[in-house]
Amino acid sequence: MVAEVSKKIYILAALIALLGIATLAVLKHYSNDIVHAVVVNAVIQKAPEGYPEAEIRRVFNQKFALAREQGEVQKYMALIKDLSHHLEKIQRLDKGEVDRLLEKVAQD
Image 1 (spheres, helix red, strand yellow):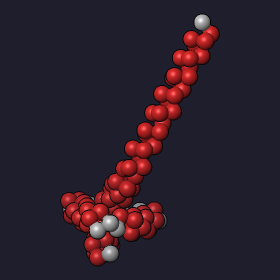
Image 2 (cartoon, rainbow, N blue to C red):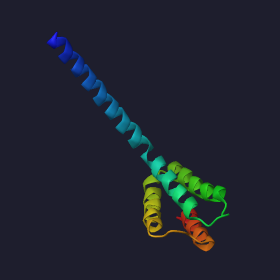
Image 3 (tube, one colour):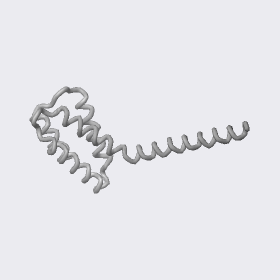
Image 4 (cartoon, rainbow, N blue to C red):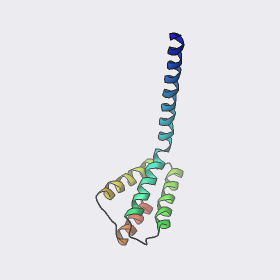
């Protein structure tokens, strides 16, 4: 009876470990997508009211897609990491700041 319980505990522990490994694999696979989405949403939230959200998404999404096609995802990630650090320090962006930020993303 004790051996059965021990066996069930080992099976349960193995399943939990497997689930943890699978979760880490999924997160690793999608980590760039998550970082991209977080930074895009931060820009949208800090943009002035009325600034076209679709334009912000379009610029970032095009650049991310291009980086993937050209094998430059790490370069793109470095760019948005820098943007993220900048965004942490400010509450709001004015229209000119958003325009310059989008220009920088599109050109880099």
